[in-house]
Image 1 (spheres, chains in turn cyan, brown):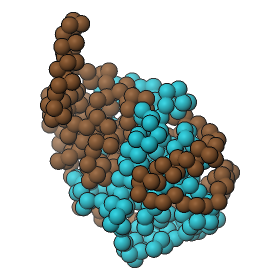
Image 2 (spheres, chains in turn blue, yellow):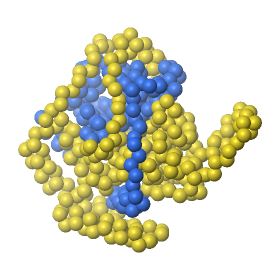
Image 3 (cartoon, rainbow over the protein chains, first blue to last red):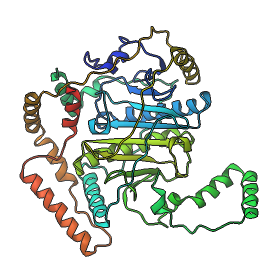
Image 4 (cartoon, rainbow over the protein chains, first blue to last red):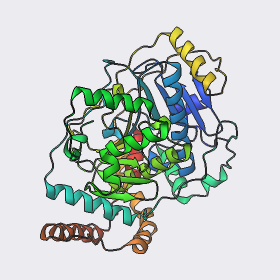
Length: 186
Length: 269
């Protein structure tokens, strides 16, 4: 079912039941656990069971489902924990604050003055700088062939569990290549 | 979040107290459909989506639009919004939620390649307490570099075991799964590891060799010139610069792809 469980990856250890955790949701490809050192009680991680370091490597169908689950958890947090807000937070890459090499989505229940700060100081850019960024991004989107993103078929719910053959992942050249690279890492 | 300040161009009328009261009364009596329509009229982002207010559009399809934030945390900060008006994420249908984050993934990919950044943050705020300022649900995509001055704080608190048990029961019940009876040990902190320089370089070389050919063909197919609708002197100048840079990077024989590098750096930590 889940192809690669990595010895070096803590999240993979949790997925493989080698490290105990408070699970709140599980299906064939997705796991959600409570963070024992969370920012607030109820802070959870939504995790793909397969090992993908960053969001760009997560296949579309899995990604759509991951955020679907994150959204459900967010709704449940609103109702069950009686909080006034939730944050969904993803750190992608070390400069963004990612600390584990396994993609995960943070769902954080929020209270007033809870010490969480996801605000920023706006940077003032000139009109020219904005136009440069605009052009660069537009060009980049065309280069990687993202003109229009097709919606994935309705994400499967908890009941209709996902049946996905692991071969479909290993067929993908790039995935396989990255996987090889990752295995070489000590 | 501060994106509203610059974009708030709709006329704001000063209302007397009586008018406000009357309005509140009116809102109370509205049906959900009417209320939605009313919110839509008041929403600056709905006006951006319909084109009544100008913005720098980066991406658009039937459901979703992505624009540059006028008060960005970093250059390239994008707001990805559903065209339909929703205040918070739990209101959105499941397939639209999936779709908007697929767009976020693609745009994150695009900005990693285009803006020489090494990471990105995806942030959603549901509710004022969570830092939501705009009435319109949106996903923030913020490109990140080392020492870029953006400082998000997510404190690590020690949550009492009792509370964890209680919450996991509550949540797993409403999510339709049974609470797992596992022995609980706290997640160990991950020690920082040094990146081994020599190995990193070696892998980088082999990576470039393999990547050649594969990615370049992709470029040829999709390469198209960008034609901004309004070309003033400045944009033409910028366009030239961008093109020059593109040629330069091609001459070097390197692809502007740092995805694999990023993944690898993470792996070596």
